Amino acid sequence: MHGRSLPNRPLVLEHLIIAPRGLVVVGPSFGQVLRGGRPNRGAGWKARQPAGRLGPPSTGATATAPGARAGTGGGEGDRRPALVRETLRRCYALRTWLGGSPWGTVPVLAAVCSCPVGRAPAHPWMMLDGLWLGTADQLPAWLVSQDILGPAARTELGRFLAEALPVG
Image 1 (cartoon, rainbow, N blue to C red):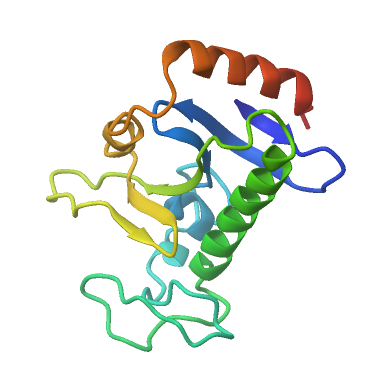
Image 2 (spheres, helix red, strand yellow):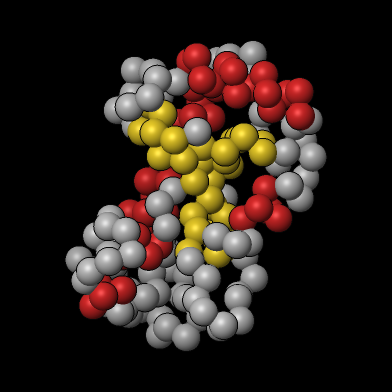
């Protein structure tokens, strides 16, 4: 499902996947955010800004990306903290809203993807503070790695969400 809004909340769920693993809120890709929200065009210099900080700047929590020096992230050019924070915020808001419905026991998860880079070996996906991080081609295998929701339950949940979450 794309572009759904939570009732009485100013949050748009850009991508929502109903998978065997549960309900997954997928944030925009790292590459798209680093390029200022545009598709694969323009401003390549933004993607080369320092990488490193994945936690909110105010907490001091960091996770260093492979090959990056610790303490080089943050600042205006590093939008990954906001990406992680906003994706998790949408996940938590959906989980809270769903908790008051008959579907309150369905797992609600968060994921952020990066684009695979040519022939470079892919790093394994990882979980960071409840957020799945990996390449877009790794996401399908993770989504089906646990069979919590069967096909009938996924269909019914999809109908419920289509009626309850307006587009917009």
